[in-house]
Length: 371
Image (cartoon, rainbow, N blue to C red; front, side, top):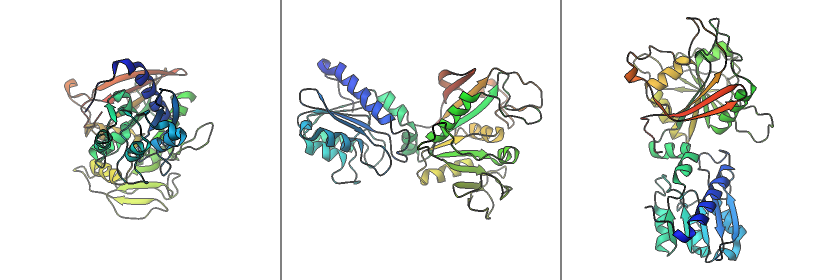
């Protein structure tokens, strides 16, 4: 569906398409379960007439904001948007119809919308109305920006991010279990940014028993931070009612029936080992329109998810410390692999300095996702 970029306008198109992505990023994940979208409208002379972005679920879409700013100047102009304009009802008219009614001459779209309700229908509507439409400019960046949304819409499951903090020799704690704090303040702040970005955060019952975490988002500037749904894997429903994680924004995934304070107890099928079937859990979270899950451990939970090939992305915070000890645990428990050929491979690596720590980010190879 990708059309050629007009040679005389390619530099301008690249600039304004990038601007649409920049605007979309301002939503900062507050649009979930909807995508992050930005739009720019130029008038017929190529001057900026209006721009906007979808700020949060239930608020005007990016195209609506940009067209409202542009007014009559949109007629004969060009619109840039990082995701295909929608065609399904949310307001009247839908975004594709609004662009057509505004009289835009060209539309430059970074990627088509994988939502089955759209999936090319917006581009077709524009083309049928005589709008010169280009698709695919900055597509890789657009897909990466909305990777949570793309994974959910193409598989029905949330995007799964695994995160752990380790010493230089690969330990997540000392042999006595002490783990606070392996990494420095900058890394811990970054990890709270990850909590803000995700719809849910998941840990195992052993982490709850050992650390009694709250699993809340805490950022220095406070502000409008998102508090993800807190999920505890607890196959035998051992959690204490007094645990700090127990509350109204908590889901306990178990194979048993029962009640735990204000938390929701979700009974799921057991796998052959008698633990919660993780694929069934992800299916249920997807049905609840949760686009993303941040997994913070512990080692057995991480090992089970990696073994089942259910992890999409990895964040590994590495501190310049040596812990040592045969009884000091690493980030992956379980039985492990026997052959190096079976090792999980991480691709698209990125390295970032956070204070004295190094953050290694990458994507798990061969996971079923549309990227």
